[in-house]
Amino acid sequence: MAKKRQIQRVFVLTSHSGCWPHTPRQMAGTGSPEQVFPEFSAAYQSLLLDAAWHRATARCTMERPLIAVLNGPNLNMLGQRQPEIYGSATLDDVEQICIQAADKLDLAIDFRQTNIEGELISWVQDCRKRARGIIINPAGYSHTSVALLDALLATDLPVIEVHISNIHRREPFRHMSYVSRAAVGVICGLGVTGYSLALQAMTDLILHEDDQ
Ligand code: DHK
Image (tube, rainbow, N blue to C red; front, side):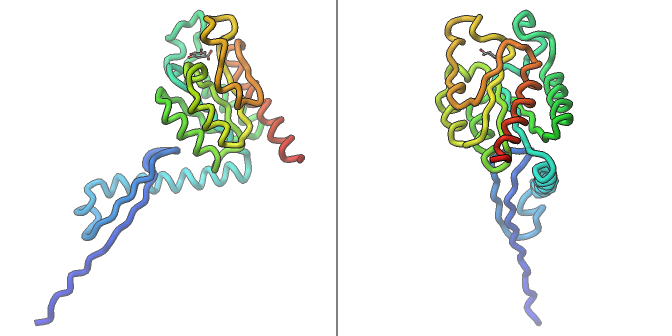
């Protein structure tokens, strides 16, 4: 009797799960994908999402320069957090302001917030391959993070630092920002309008770079 040959398929998936930026996952195995990787479907879905994201990025960067708008810790609490200092706009409002400003300026934006220093640093590192500039409100990490400064310096991209409040009118420990050493310019004390001003300034910087 002819020996039945067992056909084993090998799958190697390299997935960037979720949205940018993320840790690449590598998975390999034999058999049906569902047997080997119960999470195959999820991983496949995430590959599709990634592909869509990459296409979107490619489209954006072909047509519009991509600017990362990165937000540090506690900015997810905007609107609830010390409104007398940070105002009543929520982070969603800030994102909408940025989307509208970017639209007028013909920029594409990637707007993000994290409470985790390492994640912020990884996002900055990923900007090297994707973005034309970085607008960052590093929040509390402005005053503490040499590592974030180093990541920004390593990008070689124009950086604009934004603070909603006027850090120089506040406690002395807020007067110094490590991040400022990597920034072309700093906008502070103008509330959430600072973000749209930063996008305007970033457009000028990019146009200037393109003219060089
Ligand atoms: C936001 C924070 O969370 C503070 O830690 C900074 C900055 C100021 C801002 O004004 O946006 O000191």
